[in-house]
Image 1 (cartoon, rainbow, N blue to C red):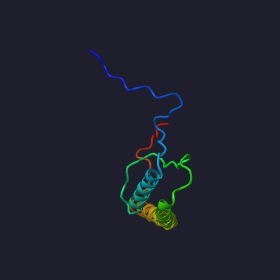
Image 2: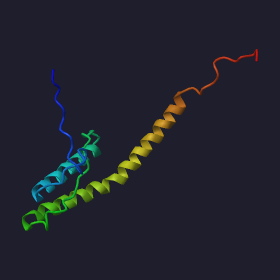
Image 3: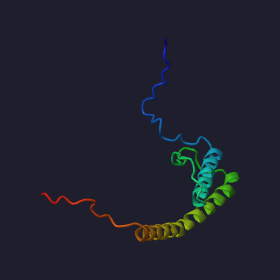
Image 4: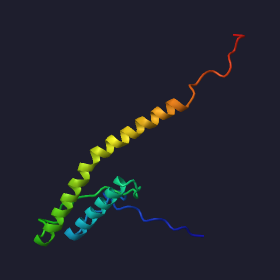
Length: 118
C-alpha cells in the first residue's frame, strides 16, 4: 500500500505566501478581486479568507493601456477606505447598545449557596 505525499516546498519558497502577479493585467485583476471582497464585507456579507494582495515588483512601469483601469481601481479603493470610519462607529454603537441591552435584561451573578459551616 503506497501513500501519496505532497511535494516538498522549494527552498526559499513559502507555500502560504501569495504568488506575485506575472503581468499587469493579472495584478489589476487581483486588486479588483480584493476590492470586490472589501465591498462584500462592507455590505455585511462574509467573504472568503484569502492571502493579502502583493504588489508587483518586477513588472516595470504600468503600460499606458492599463493606466485608466488602475486609476479607476485607485478611486474605488479610496471610496472603500473612506467608508471604513463610519462602519467602525456604527459597529461600536451597535456593540454599546447590545451591552446595555444585555445588562438590562440579565440578572447579576450572585452566589447560589453559602457555606455557613466554615
